Image (cartoon, rainbow, N blue to C red; front, side, top):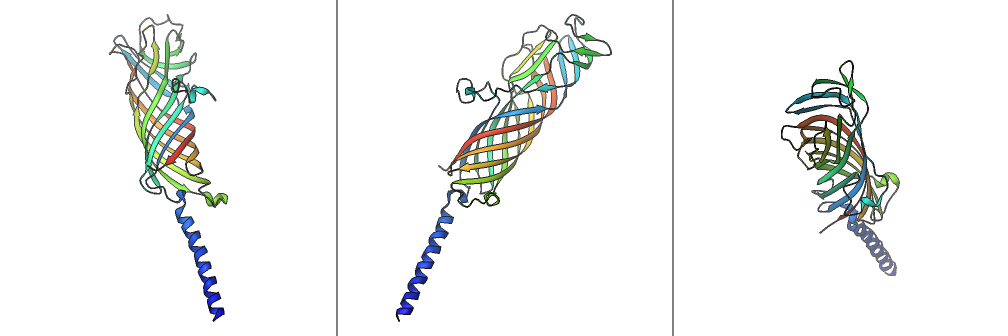
Amino acid sequence: MKKIILSSALLLVTLSVFSQEAIKIQDKYTAHNKGKFFVSWGGNRETYSNSDIHFKGADYDFTIYDVSAHDKPKGWHIDYINPGRMTIPQTNFRMGYFINDHYSVAIGVDHMKYVMDQDIAVNYTGTYPNRYTYGEALPNNQVLLTEQFLTFEHTDGLNYVNTEVSRHDDISKLFHIHDTDKVQVNLTEGIGVGLLYPKTNAKVFSKERHDDFHVSGYGASIKAGLNVTFFKHFYIQGELKGGYINMPDIKTTYSNNDSASQHFLFFQRIIAFGGIFKI
């Protein structure tokens, strides 16, 4: 009888331990994502493909071909967290919601910067007034992109306002991480579409530049990234993101007759810091 009682007691203790462990696993905050919100802020670097840029106005209509451009990095700087200067660096803001454990929907702004390379020779077609007076004229249907002739940049900035749908998968086991409430590693991939809302800084000949935000076109993108979440609520995320931008209506001056158009590919490298939580 004593043996039966002892065996029963041991069985109850064993079942209790296993039940508690099962409850602990089920109770992990990181075990499920559905219903969680997240928000992130970070910085980026960009690379752009060459593009053809078409300029037109009341007395000019010309295209420059295969034009190269670069971004305008700030580096590690206090401006990334200074509320009054947050638009000066190249930044990424994102806010989203998990519709289930693996998929999220987010909105955000990729604040990129695009600067046309100066003092390079490019092919051109078309006409413009006062040729040879800007130090730009070259033989063989080429022009030199001097500052007197043309400057062109989206530096406040090349704002890609977009919506993304992303998938998230916990890959912590690959790193032998068992307590994901302390550290969790996730793989994420996504697709996005959106509008381009740049503040273009262009000087065409001696015309006064346009200095207001303007919806200039659209874009689409794909991304892949690695997310590391600490203590359930805080994360750092690295992403590689590529896409296509088409801007058929870029404002260059305050005249309604003046505009530019271009399309190109972009490639972003992003590091962002964020939080994930339930309300």
